[in-house]
Image (cartoon, rainbow, N blue to C red; front, side):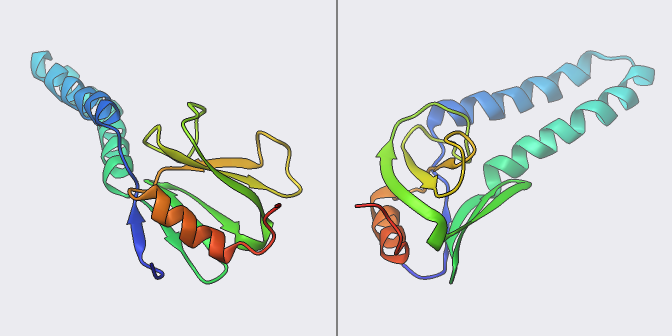
Length: 140
């Protein structure tokens, strides 16, 4: 695995919920009067764009010194030297993941909640092994 982007795994139920929401939002616009439609589009179109961006623009990238995490318009960088521990998890806490099959990343010098990030790469086992090789400060 090189510095290539690794797609985020997206669970089927997440896809159905998010794309279904987009369809409901779009379909609801067909029942509106013409004078209401402009306001409706101005307020709902950004939501649909955001959902699409998250679903289609989410990936993880092992860069030279950092793990780069991209979830649509949101991103995070975690320096390998700051990673304290890594483990597979199925934690439901909100994080930078669209699947329940996750890798939990705990960072040094952070509080528990703010120092924990979870990601869900497509092939999490291979991604975890590659990430472990780059993290030289892991606790034993």
